[in-house]
Length: 114
Length: 89
Length: 250
Image 1 (cartoon, rainbow over the protein chains, first blue to last red):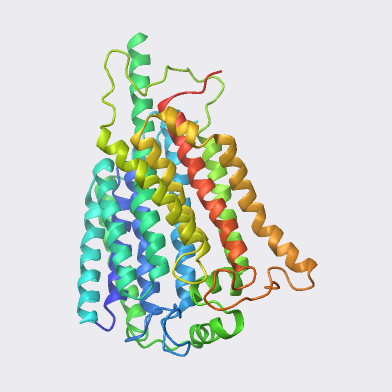
Image 2 (cartoon, helix red, strand yellow):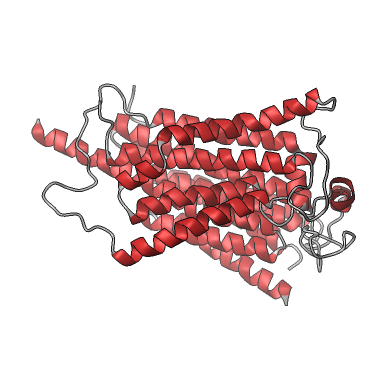
C-alpha cells in the first residue's frame, strides 16, 4: 500500500501505450492517449496526499489543521483542462484526415501520399 | 478504513484503464471512458481533492465522451457521402 | 514494420520501461508522508494573507495566476483551431439538413424528457453560476463552473431540436462571451500594473473571510475565466453540431 498508487500509475501508462501502439483506428488512438495522460493524475494526487489530513478548504476548520498539498491540486486542475483541449484538437484533426484521405487507419495512412 | 477504500478504488482504476485500451470499437470505448472518468473523480474525492474531482466529473464524464461521439458522427457522415458519390460515378 | 514485429518490439521495450518505472517509483516517499514545505506554506497563508478559504483557488488565481493565464489561452487557442479546422470549405458539396431524413418521420423527444429538461436547465445554469462565484470559499472556481454552464445548452439540444438550440445560444453571443472572458483576465493583470503593483498582483481590498466579496481580484478573475470556458465549450458544441447536422446555407 505504501507505493501502490505510483505502481498503478506506471501500469496505466504502459497499458495506454500498448493501446496506442496496436491501434487500428485514429479515434481509438486518441482515447488511449487520454488514458496515458490520466496516469499523471493518479501519480500527482498520491504525491500530495498526507495521511489523516483534511482537504485544503478551510471553511469550517481552523486554518492550522494539517491539510493535503494544494499546489499539486492546482497543477492537476490545469492538467485536466489541458487534456480536454488536446483531445478536442486531435479529434478535429482526425476528422480532417478522414476527409482528405478517406481512412482513419494509422497503418494505411502511412502509405498515402500528398 | 479509508486506506482500504483507496486501495480498492486504485485497483478498480487499473482494471478500467486496461478495459479502455482493449476496447476496439470507438463508440463502445466512449462509454467506457466516461465510466473511467467517473472512477477517477471518485479517486480524487477519496484522496481529499474536491476541486479536481468537480473538474474531472464535468470534463471527463460529459465533455470528453460528447466530443468523441460528435467526431465519430461526422466521420460516419463523411463515409456515407463518399459511398453515395462513388455510387453515382 | 509489420504489426507482429511492432508488437514484439513494444513488449520488449515496455518491459525495460516498466523496470525503470518501478525503480523510480519505489524511490519516492511512501504514500501519506508528504515532506515538501511549499504546500504547507501556502495552506498556512491562505486565510491570514488573502482572506480566502479555498487554498486551491488561491494557488490557481493568485499565487500562480500567470500559469492559469497561459492555460486559459491554451483553451482559447484550441477552440479557435477546432472552429478553423471544422469550417465548411468553399468547394464542399452542400447537402440538405439531415436532422430528419426526408422519407422518415423523426422520432422526436417524449414529453417527459422535455419537461424534466426544462426544469433541469434552470437548475444547471444557477448551479454553474454558484460554482463560479463561490470559487474562493468552497471547491469550485472558474473552470469547473464554466464547464457546468456549458452543459446547459447541450441539454437544450438534447431535449429539443437543433433550431431551439440555435435560438437559445446564438453564435454571436457565444463569440462575444468567450472574447470578453479571454481578454478580461489580461485586462485585470494590466489594471494591477496600473495600480502600481506587479502584473496580476492582488491590489483590491480583501474583504471579510467567508463572504463572496473576499480575496481581492480573485472573484473577478473567476468570473472572467468562467465566461471564457463556458463560451469556448459552447462554441465547440455549436461548431460540431452545425457541421455535422447541417451545412451552412450560402
